[in-house]
Amino acid sequence: MIVPVNLGKDSYEVVIERGVLNRAEKEINLDRRVLIISDSGVPSEYAELIASKSKNPVISVFEPGEDHKSLETVQKMLQIMLDNNFTRKDCVVAVGGGVVGDLAGFTASCYMRGVDFYNIPTTVLSQVDSSVGGKTGVNFGGVKNIVGAFYQPKKVLIDADVLKSLPKRQIANGLCEALKMAMTFDKETVEIFKKENPFEQVEVLIQKSVQIKARVVEEDEKESGLRRVLNFGHTLGHGIELNTDGKLYHGECVAIGMLPMCSDKVRSELLPLIKKLEVPVSCSLDIEKACRSISHDKKAEKSIIKCVVVNETGTFEMQDFTVEQLKEKLQTVCENVIPAVSACNTCNK
Image (tube, rainbow, N blue to C red; front, side):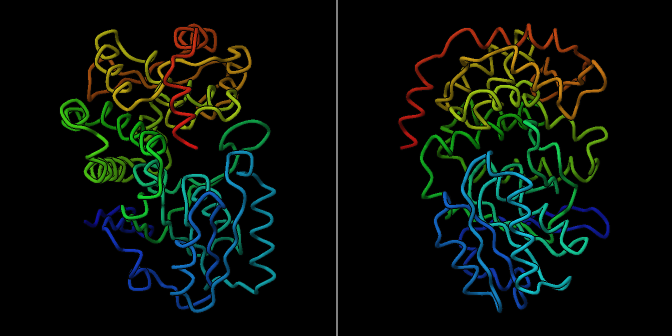
C-alpha cells in the first residue's frame, strides 16, 4: 500500500509493505553520503541493511530513551556529518522508533539548513504515528519536544517484518496511539479493537492509522487547527510520562491520559479497550510535579491549555482548561497502580 501525503512541494509517499527494506535502494536515493541514525535498542541488522545498500554510509548509534533525545545528541550527529564532509546533496535516514525519528529529522533540518530525510520506523508506535507528519525535535529543560521543527521526510518506509523482534508490551504501546486516532476520527476502526484481537490486526491498524494521519496533516500541516486533535490524551499523558521515571511507555501514558478527557459514556467504552491491550489505566505519580510539566506544554497559552475531549466515539471537541482543572482530572487516574503495570514491566525483559 502507498499512502500519499499531499503537501505541495513537500509531498511524499508512505510505503507500507512487508519486505520493503530489502529493496530500500529502489525506494529512496542512497547513491550518496548517508548518515544512518539508530539507537542501541534497535536490532543492528536494520541499519546495517540500509548501509549495505548505500554508496557512502555512516552509521551512528546513540543510547535509547528520552534522556538521550537532546540537543547534545543532535550536536554529536551534526559533528559526524561535518567530519565526514556531508553536503546539501547528502541525506539522513532514521532507523528506529519515535525518538530516533524525531532526533534524526531535526538533525537533517539543521545541517546546512536542511538535507534530505528518510524515515524507516521500526516500532508500532512510530509506524502508526510519529513517522508521518514532519514533527521533529528534542526535549529540553525537562519539557518534551519543546525544541524542534516541522520538517517533512522525502519518503517513509513501513515494513511490518521489523516488528517481529518487539515484545508484546511494545506492540501494545503503539496500538494505544492507533486507538487514540480511531477514538477521534474513525468509529469503524474502534470496532476492530472491540470485535477483533488487536494484536492480530496490527498491519490493518497501521494502514488505517497512517491514512488518518495523512488526511489530518494534509489539512493542517503545522498544527494550527485540526492536527491538534491528534494530541488527544497527550496533555495529561506528557505530564505522566515526564514524571514516572521511565516506568511507563509513551503510548501507555497517552492511554491513561485519554480516560479523564472523555464523557462517561465514551470512558465506559474506552476503558475495556485499553485493558484489552493489557495496558495500565492508572499510575502512581507526583501530581504537583506533573502539573508543572503540563503548564509548560506547547499547547498552553498563558494560563489556558487547549485539550481534545471526546464526548462521542469517532468525534472530538476542543476545550479550554486551566492547569487546576487538569490537575483534578489527573487525580482520577493517579490514585493507585493496577497489577497490569508490573505485568507490563515483566514482559519487556
